[in-house]
Length: 294
Image 1 (tube, helix red, strand yellow):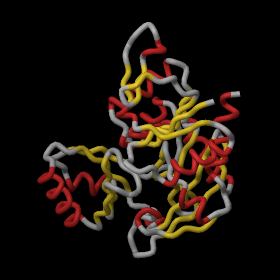
Image 2: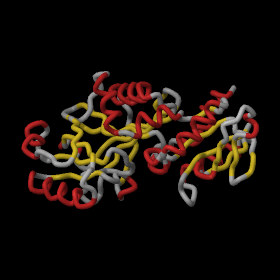
Image 3: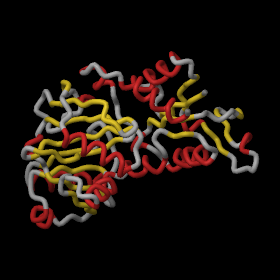
Image 4: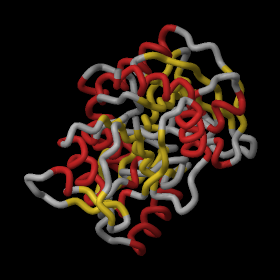
């Protein structure tokens, strides 16, 4: 059995290293590959249709893409070619597409009555008065793709919002962004749930340590284990099912005694989960992949 971890990072992340270590400990050959170093040929002889670093290679039994929202058209074409050849993808290319676009994710959740913040797609020029009427201020401004809290801003009032829009217009006068209601009960805190193979394996509460409205650990936040209640579990499992994810990181916002889904990630980081809890996420993923292939 052989597997690849697709990553676009020059140095493998904690998650990539852990997965490779766990697979190798289980006598499964696994290493990381940059998808841009894979060339494909459309040929009737599939044995000669895939090259890595300009060399023909035997295709792997499985691939775990850890590229998330940064996935390009070229990379998705590589994914689909390998999928057509029967390679198991955890997650597959369609599910990655579903969560890459934050607006599309919210549309799927809304269609299935999954609680989420009020969301609005806007383009330049923006009618600020209409935004205030439909959502109100403070308001969260997001790029259509992005992870780890990048491309996410909080405009406290109309003045701040106009300033932010003016700055964005200077950078790109054809920008498209989404606006979301600011869920005040979750200021500086949220919940991360990890789902593997249709099962919740654990969760943690993340909190900002510097007053930032974002609670991402990668932005300096802290975390602690949390008991996953029935509502958390339902939202995590149902949202990942709807999006077709084998592995997912579901971020929940606190809202008036309940929760709303903030975001869902197809290649969630789990360094924080393993650091702040006793969960061994990498081992759970390895077990799931082995069961899928057997």
